[in-house]
Length: 413
Image (cartoon, rainbow, N blue to C red; front, top):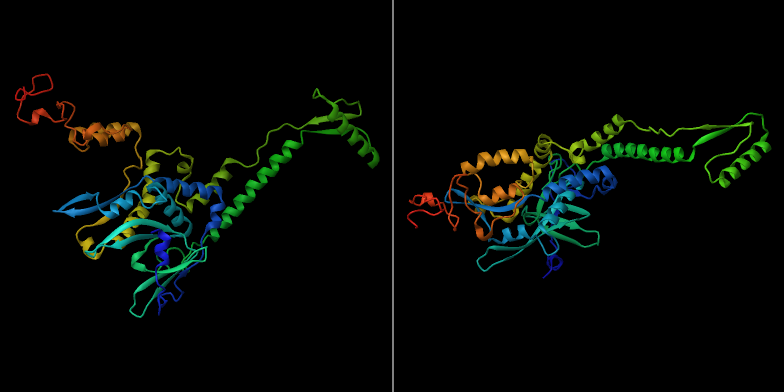
């Protein structure tokens, strides 16, 4: 059964009405900010964020015996690894990040079926791209979400079954963004319009400057007919000349125009870039890719960390029941693959962390860009540089034996 087949099986909800709001505005959302995505700066800035979200490692975690453990065999853990038949994990995070940045709202529908034991078995996670969304409520005050898509298809789903990831949530009761549940881009669009005029003027100026190389001055008074004839004569000489030299007589003078085109100064361009990028939370250093460790950390804390946390919470709220959450079930998106450290910092961390037993060997190898050791040999905590390991990757000095200098203990010998 495909994803859309499941949608078509949903019955229409009878007796529903627009959900109540404190502001008095109807709880619908129909403005989607695709127009700002026409800007090259906005595209690049959103790509910077989407590329970082693609590095996240989502995990299903659970508290067991007072300890936090990673669950790898649950249905939701499998969906986090492979969200659906159309997308990889990276595709999934990239798509929902772009939706959030453009619309301040992103919707994810987890498909599932109920087992004989009454538990949900999840089969996929699907990002939705509706053109119109409205929150509804029935006579029992249960919330539903009505979706309409570009194809004309529409569906009403229980709000508890839809992951709604919001940004700038506060003014509207149900949606992120402005009071009407949308992305108010008027200020940004005005700035982008001025930037577009600037870039167009640069193109025109460059085109004109490449066409005018010099001025031919006639040292006499010419009437209109003679001026036109002189111009035609000059054009013919220019067209027939293959040496690059213009022949003229004593009555004409050629004035060369040197090409030293300086149209827009650096400060003006940086002013536009910084003001446009300020709306996205992406700095110029991040956009150019020449950032320092401090700048990368600031980018994560300022522009990514809150959204990473809110996405994990939004997904946990839908896929787990209150009882499951009380047992510590949650979805956490770990940012350890978002590289903050230079190679020098990595080596310093390993010099401290390896002897202290902070890293298993494969984690240390991954930090340096090496693949894991075969046969699970890297899934042990490094014992320091002086520890001796046997062929099974065990520390023989901790097994009661004494080393005989050959890598095996006297007891084993």
